[in-house]
Image (cartoon, rainbow, N blue to C red; front, side, top):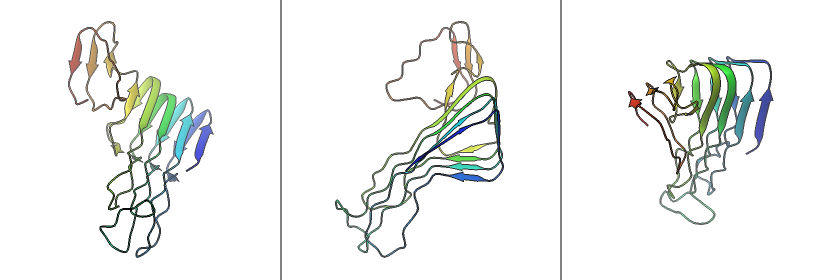
Length: 169
């Protein structure tokens, strides 16, 4: 997949931005392709529509056939939003291909970096987003409160004083 890099002072997404791998017709042997990535850098980002970067499905004529040429699921791409103010009430999805007898492929990452305001309370996000700053309220050096579900990067170390978990990591 490719990369859509969107830089604007204000970004409103009310429709669909889709960097997903296309699916191929059934009854054909093929591997799913990896999705592209969506990178948004703005002062204000408001998503009421959909951001997709989903991997393609893998298929075979024999539903159990997993070989180098058939049945592999494509990996999801990465969706990254960097803004002062982020509002998402729409959908964000970066999953691996939903079908494939090899049962492989990886989900992509949903990353949200914000400096002022974050509201994802009514959003549908396919996997927990990685948020920066990590604390929903407070700071890592004083008192850090987590009230939403969070994703973390593999091998990430979080050092905090008075960490209060009110959601899931």
